[in-house]
Image 1: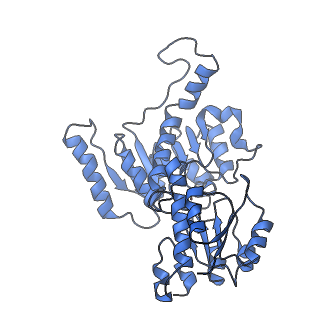
Image 2: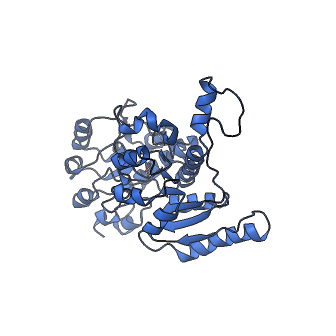
Image 3: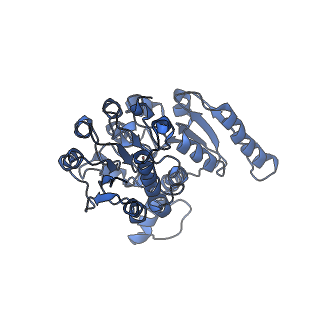
Length: 363
Ligand code: GLV
């Protein structure tokens, strides 16, 4: 077999990458925590590598893809989101790319849930109080209170894999759930979800009979107490949460974003927070990552109401590193790459799992 040449823009997990070497591939891994420059990626691609392993921080644009037009057979993205890859250019040059859907769904959904609890119940200000030695006495409301989640309404914007997994986790919270999505929410899924909520109330396990419904974006924003974003970033969703949308949100509501930073207009969010037009927000993703030192989101005046995380939603040990393609992003990235490079015959091309742009095969 040909020794396929692979360049990985970072160490996505050594156990999974070992699989490539065991198959006789020539693997080069960028040997640094910081990303390679675009110039270096282009240089590697132009040197004729067969496959490129990427992450969300690598901009795989026209220039990179053009450099691989004759030789690059696959890009394996170690993430579910792929807004950093120019899909049209990839198609133009016939370069398929894979991603790691499914294996990070539950991990990201549970992180979103914990972010919701964290910002609503003021976990950070409470811990800060204790750590900084400012806890003077136990008092019914001094120096702060949190907002209880049960009895409230959670809005889920985007009912793909992660949005749905988040919804399932919300069934344990005694909340009403409102869903909204670009295309209609699957009614069969809504029925199954409602069955869980009804069963909890009918069997006396919860005091409130909760509901799940599909609503318009406007209705969702106007009614929700927690608004959780689960949409991919594209032209339609860029700044979906702009000034106008944020103005619709209740001043007591919280925004949770585990999708992509640019789904939220950060300047508008800062303004809304400062003017107390929204109670708080928890962000795991940003318009620019890492979050710049001078970002207005770092304003100390917002600190108690604004939780900031380092794009950590899928950051569970097993989810990030397992070499098992059914469990880990590393395993799935490597498996996707192998599947494309070692495809048996051209009729099977469009059936290769994990490939996003099957149209790149021209079939
Ligand atoms: C992380 O954000 C991913 O897209 O996997």
